[in-house]
Length: 81
Image (cartoon, rainbow, N blue to C red; front, side):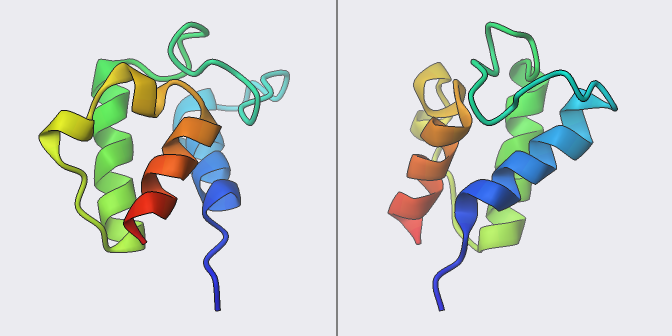
């Protein structure tokens, strides 16, 4: 059974970082430019990804390109599964 990565990541970001602001479309937003996630938030998200999906995110993979959008985060995780 394939894991649905994108909806899990989207829901986590909504619940952890958006804090009730339902006007934000997390799925299509630039998470960094729109200040949904900051540098500390990236590390919080990395910890969640490692725990939830049982993968290891290498230090060199923790960069702006991999955490700019939900699509980028999804691609990173799916590449590790």
